[in-house]
Image 1 (cartoon, helix red, strand yellow):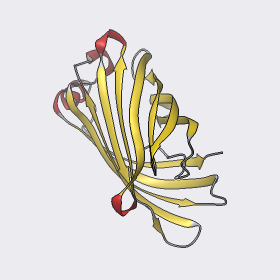
Image 2 (cartoon, rainbow, N blue to C red):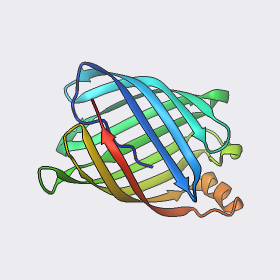
Image 3 (cartoon, helix red, strand yellow):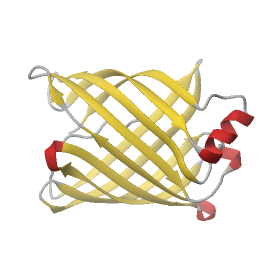
Image 4 (cartoon, helix red, strand yellow):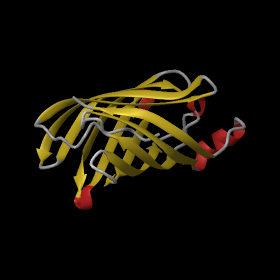
Length: 186
């Protein structure tokens, strides 16, 4: 579940909101919200720290988050965030994306995201180690830099114990889905 970035504008400090969710058949399968404080430490790079709240799957869970995000060489946008949760659960999420301008307002964005967890959490269907990897493609139209709806497709694959938990629950380890959303920043 790729996250829309809040734009490439890098200020000295900012409050950042990152959220994602997944609905299937009218039911929420997964959702989280991150509230992060970001501060520039180098040109095009921010350090971020804050909290993440997972609403689903399973019972809600809170994490403390710390990470970096910025513009890597060749204009790849990169996010790397580490999490420390309740009961000593640890996690890490790495994401990279690239923007190709088809016109001044129409942008094609391939992205890759991988998630890792420090220990098994069977009630939430999460296994230790490499948990999931996603690859996707989004097409957005920027009415303004601050407001841009998008559509796209994402393919997700579960690995290791996460895949085992999904098989035990009669769920697939591979999932391809269409996504839609709005990228905003202010």
